[in-house]
Length: 200
Image (cartoon, rainbow, N blue to C red; front, side, top):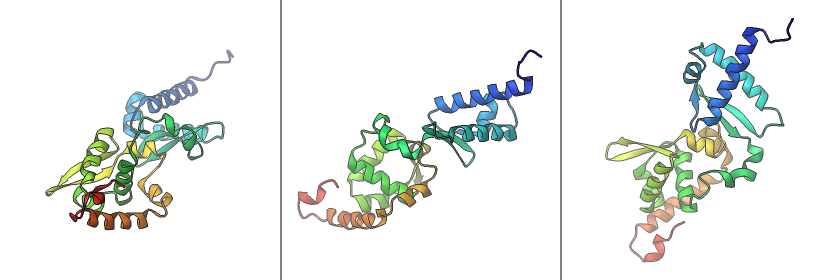
């Protein structure tokens, strides 16, 4: 005996390391099929085994990140307990508050038409949507004479979420706030002075 790992185990260890490296480098979640191709065209069942092993390893308290697999897409994200301490290092941390509020409305309703968004947030929402599209936090597709807006995987990754439903659960008072925004937007569209156009 030479003390070397059996070939099968050695290959599995290498494949797991390759998947970890791919997930670390990719700016977007990777599908199981993509990962299978990266490790040499293996089966999806084998990829699932590797992802399960990675998830179990990073679930340990010693790790500050975790593996999330949702709808067949895998991504590393910061664990909730550490998001606040490192959020200032994220590339999107300079988002203005009014734009964040527009993003929150899009995420809460996901999807929502741009027409409905503008009704609730006022005409300033057009500029907010443009900025959010440029940042890759929302996507848009034509729907009649308007656009249908929704959040992207980058949005989930940035805020450390596994799904939009998780966002809705975490924002307990957002529904009341959105109602307030809708009322304010109605007043904004009335030409009664510049004060109605101040950003919220």
